[in-house]
Image (cartoon, rainbow, N blue to C red):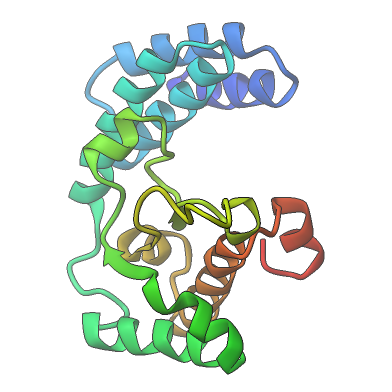
Length: 199
């Protein structure tokens, strides 16, 4: 059986809920060696998901750490948007919000990075996540103490460009990601965001 066939069989097993069998097959796939970097990244990413589903967070973090490096090596040499244009698209998404909400966001840092840091990934953050809100949502804060640490919205430029390969799709999904992570700051759940078209 080819490594591609094994990979697809493992993906089916994981989708069906058999993470242990999926992980065993994917370990065999990555053990072959000499894989194309893009395929190896996909196999290790799926292996990380399977290990996480099995409760092996260390194994998941190890595989996902490798994915970070493989994805960085495969990154296109010319991004679709310059850093300045990417930032202006993100700012335009924020500017859609009413002034009262912008006032609440005043102390929230918005960081544009290529992808999550190795430290984030070792803490269990998906290496291919598009955006991340880090902080305590407004609706869960104590009135007397506020947030225990700084609020930050992360946008991961290289991950967004990896998924959305045309300028128009990328611009739209930067907007969606900014609004999605901003909504997390205000305390919206993933289910609520899906119903709003922001998932």
